[in-house]
Image (cartoon, rainbow, N blue to C red; front, side, top):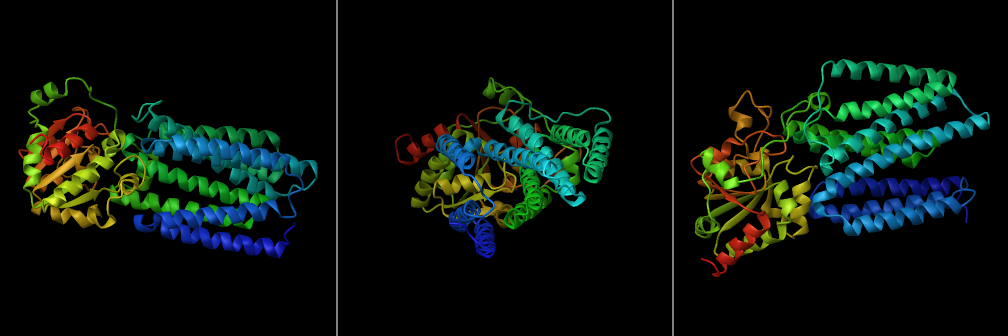
Amino acid sequence: MDLSVNQQALAYLASAVLFILGLKGLTHPATARRGNLYGMLGMLIAIVATLVGREVQAYGFIIAGLAGGAVIGGIVAMRIQMTAMPQLVAALHSFVGLAAVLVGIGTFFHKQANGLLNPVLMGEISAGVVIGAITFTGSVIAFGKLQGLLSGAPVKFAGQHLLNALIGLATIALAVHFAMTGNLLSLFLMTLLALVIGVTLIIPIGGADMPVVISMLNSYSGWAAAATGFTLHNNLLIIVGALVGCSGAILSFIMCKAMNRSIINVVFGGFGSDGGSADSAGAQAAEKGVKSAAIEDAVYWMEDAGKVIIVPGYGMAVAQAQHALKELMELLAQRGVEVKFAIHPVAGRMPGHMNVLLAEADIPYDQVLEMDEINSEFPSTDVVLVVGANDVVNPAAKEDPTSPIYGMPILEAGRARQVYFLKRSMRPGYSGVDNLLFYQDNTYLVFGDAKDTIEGMNTALKGGGH
């Protein structure tokens, strides 16, 4: 069955509406599942409408690609750990970028062979190839940093910004020349330089800015898809690309605002470095004057508290401690303790990372509060339990003008009566900045794996060890 042009347009319109509803649903954890379902249904309609359209002449390679992709995607989805979700997102962004490059180059050769090239089409190809190439290599570098294959520290060298500017100008000049002449050498050099820019833009960005990088690359992938839509004269691809591009750009802006940093600073700056050894945590703590505590000490304070606020971070994701936290919350609630979760916008390594993990453990949404909602409650809180977070509660952001994170709004955990940090070691956070909260009189560190420590707390609360 072949769809007419009008029927296909209606199907694409329905898909676009579902994508918009999907984005709307993803704005809140309570509606995120529904948003995902809307997006999946929209994509299904789009794929079917494209496959039965008149422009498709043969299905051999299409079926092979769909089958191969479905198998790979299914295996990855079943095996991926939540801790690896940020690098998976980065990898998927790289695929979108690479696809835009390949489609652009393939379209050029196809249209050239049929004598259908024109400056407008070649301009569209230029945009898709350049944005796609930057997205591809930039996402590969982000994946390497998140996976630990590359250092999370920023890579900087003298004249870096000037070099990026020169490469950028050369890329634009080549893109314009290609659009005007269809010169194959210009296409090759333009693609090569765009691939280089993707690397040089991301390597100077430090670990603390990685959530912004992920959302920024998401925006790039959307614009690459939109440019490809113009090349292929596919209206739905243009709409979807624009939705992704705009939403990613808005999210990047929101993330930068939450960190009190300009997006230009993030794109061309970067801070932080790996630091600290994970060995002899207790000895390092004693040498620095940091007070350590046992599980029983934290339990003693929490079980008699009026209010406990839990601050999750990437360490919770690594330990997969969210389900143990759910049980801790329930045990404390049975004792009449009010328990809330405080989420910083950049906690973890991608936007919404902590919200996803807490939702996975079925922690009620009304007990999960954002930074602006919860900060006023810390002074009236008896105990703050920090689970693997670091930079997002570091007072250096407010007190130390020389700190690279100075100016970033934080969760003001230090204003509570008692603060207990669950940490493996004295190693600083992803930004590599020492945490001043460790040295406050009301702060104690409980060393060990977060999941094991929380399970120990649960056992003590049940009466098995307290």
